[in-house]
Length: 293
Image 1: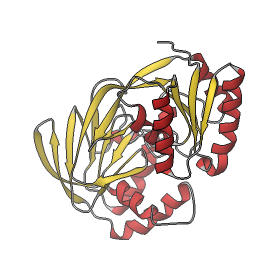
Image 2 (image 1 turned 30 degrees about the vertical axis):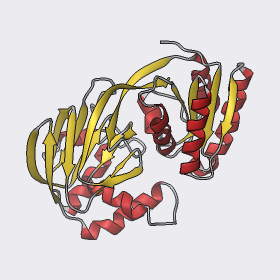
Image 3 (image 1 turned 60 degrees about the vertical axis):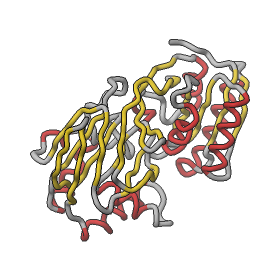
Image 4 (image 1 turned 90 degrees about the vertical axis):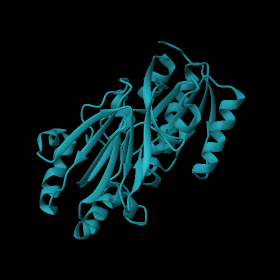
């Protein structure tokens, strides 16, 4: 479908990507305005204000909401546009940019990404929802979530290195945990290193944990990595970037419409954002997002 927008709200996170957000927002705005698109520029002082600004702009009437930032800002925008039929545009400016990877948006060229918005070509995608919150990529609910939780307490360094250091800090205490999964009504009890629930195939900047996930099939991909030793975990990690971990004996994969994940001491993270402690019930909502792509 093609829906060229005449007016957009452009929500920018100026600190995304170590300052790329600010630069990319200016470049994208220039392209949009040159194309005759009316641009309402929005910058929030924090996530709560950004969410309020986006909601107000959409309520006032625009043809699309466009975000310039990373997957965290995309997640914020989903809470505004999911299920409404209002298109979402993305100018990738973050560290991971997995949503942009899904639809092959230019990740280092804000002008090219803005021209995709101007073209107005849309794609309808599924989203995942839990406790009234939406996400587009992957819900981390295992060792990766524990690493995220520690990284959130660290003020230094920024970017990927913070997660690398958090991983090293968590490894000494690493141990598989007992999980209870409800897979479309079928209960499974097992010990696991990691459980991930994917709407899309990757998170964390291209870690293809839920390799094979399809964005418009009406299903979630639930990946279980059964118990690994610390050494096995470290050796398996690089395979996630290529999606070749799927051949590991500890790998298990399910496709479901709804899943409940329960385990002690785990806080779920999705689109890089902190959601809530397990247990969480996650459902696929087909066609919930219209993405300008």
